[in-house]
Amino acid sequence: METIIRTIDYDNMDLEIIKQAAKIIKDGGIVAFPTETVYGLGANALNEKSVEKIYNAKGRPSDNPLIVHISSNKELYSLVESVKLKAQMLMDLFWPGPLTLIFPKSNLIPDTITAGLSTVAIRMPDNKIARELIKYSGVPIAAPSANISGRPSPTNASHVIKDLNGKVDMILDGGEVKVGLESTVLDVTGDIPTILRPGGITREMLEEAIGEVLIDPAIISDKELLSTPMSPGMKYKHYAPKAQVIIVEGEINKVIKKIKSLAEEKQKQNIRVGIMATEQTKNNYKTGFILSVGDRNKPETIAAKLFDCLRAFDEEGVEIILSESFSYEKIGFAIMNRLKKAAGHNILKV
Ligand code: AMP
Ligand code: MG
Image (tube, rainbow, N blue to C red):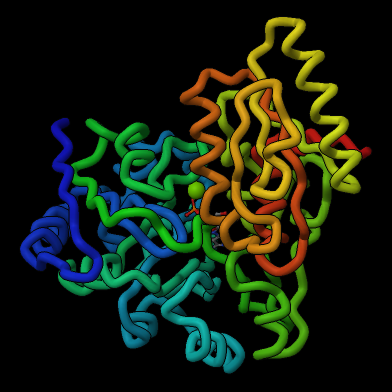
């Protein structure tokens, strides 16, 4: 398939390009587009055949449900059975934004989207290109991240092109995304809302708004995942570069020392080593392919660069990535969640 690739200027949007993409969605095709979290691969959420195309293009397991994207609150009500007060409060506060809410689904939502679950995940993205695309399509858009299943999520169009060129109808290039990690997924169907996937909207932010919020134990566990996590997507290997990732965790000077000695040891064995460091620490290393993922004091810079760095190591043909660990504070919790998954929970404590 020939993929149409169009660049679109965020601040001066060419509506003709949006309309072209929207027509493809209406006609049953699939389009990759930017959101503020990562790039998504979208299809008409109400058309089962179109949604199947997403699973095929990504090689996504059919039991991993998709998030449905809307462009205004009023589009929500026909897609869900009910909206609790706490959910309404969160929508008012955080939408549009990187918060996905789980609701009991209505009959309009096909089973392909929810992988047979009676609930549906819904979000309103805070990216004008995404919202205009949904608006002009006239339908909700089901969209997982626009990467081959298991690979790091795409944070710019070149990542999408690398994974999906020739497999999708269109790619909208809207530049680098803002957040760089996927949305927080929050189950609001029970009495106490539960985080199923950490993201840019943190537990603290949610608790300030609605009181107690739980975290799915599968997220906190350092081990490989429970057999039946509440969010089916959690059980799959995710965000993984081709290289093996090892996280070295502990006091930062000890971490640097350990990474240096490991890098030298691997180099002697002719293994191509990559080191994921930060602005503060990168100059300590001499051996291997060294990348700074961002500023330790500004975790949002690390979130924005994490997936791009993991992909850059692959481009370089690195076989082992030795990564420093980062603070768990605020968005750090989501950063460490993705990094641990990328590492298959391979963590060395020093
Ligand atoms: P992705 O769109 O690739 O970022 O993945 C969507 C995430 O949302 C996956 O982890 C899914 O398991 C999760 N998800 C989607 N729908 C539901 C649902 N109805 N209940 C629980 N988790 C869901
Ligand atoms: Mg994904």
